[in-house]
Image 1 (cartoon, one colour):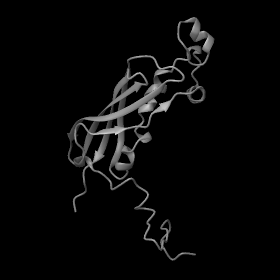
Image 2 (cartoon, rainbow, N blue to C red; image 1 turned 45 degrees about the vertical axis):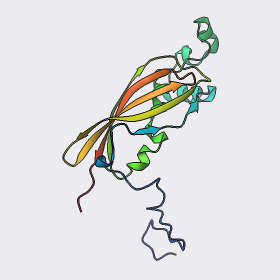
Image 3 (tube, rainbow, N blue to C red; image 1 turned 120 degrees about the vertical axis):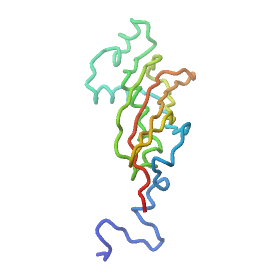
Image 4 (cartoon, one colour; image 1 turned 120 degrees about the horizontal axis):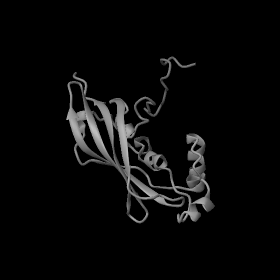
Length: 171
């Protein structure tokens, strides 16, 4: 048994599980700048991802799961549900949440406009970019422009995310 407090790991190397599991130190509202970008890794939307989305969402529109139905309507393959494209902008897939792990209060809202079709087999490239910063008393609101482009560099989604972030604690 260890003599350390519950949840604290001992290490002869100086590793501290509570400090060293992060991508870096916490960033506070005042540390962010308009124009900063947070890339989210690209993803190819496979048939398996379509099936997982259908299972999770309960969606039963054949345009999203019946290839022959899609082809009869002049689509080259399964058409992604708009929400399936929108979830590609989840900040948790990138580094942003690791940077605000101690300062994030809440995601306030998100929106999306669908600009073009996404089909099974397409690769999508999500990006979040800070477009506005609104300071408040002890917090601030970060607005991010969310975009998704396909493998042809076509914009297929644009929208916004808004996050409530704490300001740096006063010492």
